[in-house]
Length: 403
Image (tube, rainbow, N blue to C red; front, side, top):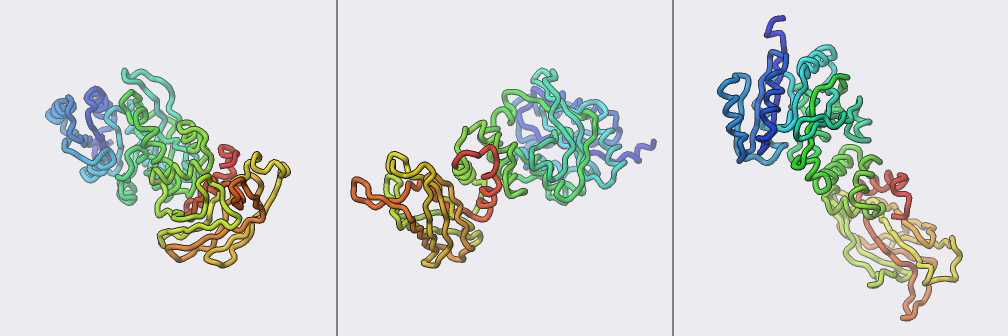
C-alpha cells in the first residue's frame, strides 16, 4: 500500500496533571501499526511532570505536538484539539487511557468498509493504576434508541469521522462528565454508528479519575439532564443510578432533585397559597402560580393525604372529589383516595401569573375549629418537560410507591 492511501487519523488527548500515566498513553498511540497519524495533546497547564514528558516527545517525534495553556476544562480542550487537527478520522484518548495494538488500523478498516457509519467503536477493558486488567468494559451494539437505556460505548474505543464531529459542533462545553454520552446521542440521532467486535482500548480507573470523584455530584445530574434533553424522560437505568446514591425519595423527590440541579429549565413556581403551617388546606384551597411565558404550565402535581388518625371514621379506601378552577373558570374534576399523587392537566395558560382553586367534597373540623380537607405535602406546577418526565416515570417499577 502507498502511504498516501491511508486517511490521516488525528488523535486528541486532553490533559491535566496526569504525568503518572501520560507516557503510557503517548506510547500506545505512537506504537500503533497504522502509518498516517497526527497526535495532539491539549494540556490545561499541568503543574506536575506532564510538560517535561510532552516536550521530550515533541523533540523526537514529528507526528506529535502539544499546547499547554489554561482552558475551561476537558470539553473545551477537546474542541480546541479538534480545531487543530487535519485528519479525516478523529480519536479522543484521555491522558490516563491507552490504545491496544492494532486499534487505529482496525477502526479505519471498519470505516472504509462501511462509509455510511459516522463512528465506529470497539471493545475495551478496565485497568487499574498499575495497568492491570480489572474487567471487560461493558460495550454493546447501539443506536439512538438503545442509548436511551444507558451508555454502552467506551469513550477511548471510539473513532469519529471529522466531518460528522464538526457538523454536530464538537463536544458540549457545558458538560464536564458525560460529554461523551451526549456526543454519541447527538451523532446517533442523525447517523448510523458501528460496533467492531475487537478490543480497541483500556479505560483506566483510579482514585483521582472523574468516575471515582465526580459521579455523584456532577455525573448523575449531567446524565439526567442529558437524558431529558434528548429523550424527554429518564430511563430505568439512570433512575436506578440516581436512586442508588440518593435513596428512595419518590417521584416528587426526583422532580425536586432535577430542579435543584438545574436539569430542567424555565420552571413555574407557586408563589402564594392558603395552606396552613401544618400543611392542612381548607376545602377551598387556592394558590398562585407564576411562570415564564416561554414554557407555560402544563399540569399541577399535588401530593396529599388524609392522615388516618385525623379521620378514623373513614373507610380504608375512601374516595372524594376535587373540582378545579383556573382564574375562576372550570378546569375539570378528579376523584382521589385518602392518599394520593394527582397530576392535574391544565390548558396552556399564556399568563405570567394565574390563580388555581381546588374545591374538595371532603372536609372536617379540627380542634382549632378550622375547616380542613387534606394535608397538601407537595404542590408543584409542572412545565411540559417536567410533565412528560412525570408521566413517563410514574409507571416505572422504580417508583411504584406514592411520590
